[in-house]
Length: 335
Image (cartoon, rainbow, N blue to C red; front, side, top):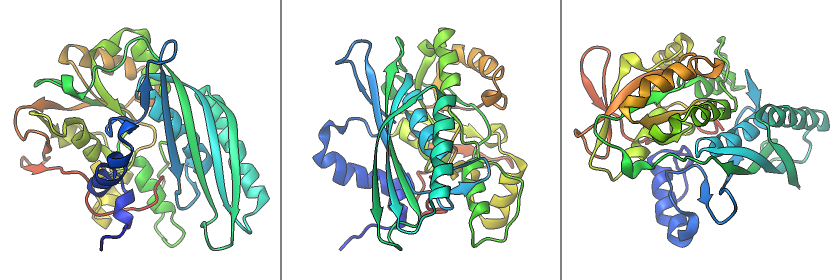
């Protein structure tokens, strides 16, 4: 009898299979698994809707906490579907004995992040469970956003020669949360990249560059490699990455080398990865680099006829390796 394991929550292959074989089977209206939000044109201008739950451990980490993560994460899921985040709801599951002072600080962090994102938290719910049943605090957030006039054209429009861009360094959040774990003595200067990416999307819309975007996501659970696999899943084309072009902070590289992690599978919480028409790539990079969130933006690969439906990487030493979806759970509960 199959049972749920931690790897079913890592955003990788097991998550993909669980959603396809259980949830989509019964919730067929859930739509495209590869999308971060549900898109509907049933309302004037069109809306995007999304929901996300947050169980990060520890709930405080350098650069953020479970509160800021819940707001930014949900706002980002709307933003990468080319929607301006408008409203959020929040649901709290609180463990008996959790300090009200700490809860107050987390709620303030949520309010501060909401103001920064330009969204309003308009509804919520609170549940309390017995001590030992919630590991402190879990938060669910749902969000509604207003669609831009031009949306990404979709993964079915990805063509050979298209360019893959990322808005900054990868793996920052995953490595930071690992370093902050209470049972680890490892010390570093890492800071999570937890932030709202909507300003980067707004720049594309305002400049007319959204027309060249095929698909975009924020590479959270499963990291960059898993997100790109989802982009080309089932397509006749694949993606080739250049390892030397992928921006990774030295501190992230150090942790990965020490512990056997791979930065392309570590979560980001303030980055955008997209596939675009090659004639738009340099313009998008130039634009993003004008914003603090995009100063490390880079072209990291391209769409190729090789390895259809998959991703591979030219390594820094001249070899090649296949990057499948994340399989085992390197680091559970990072968001």
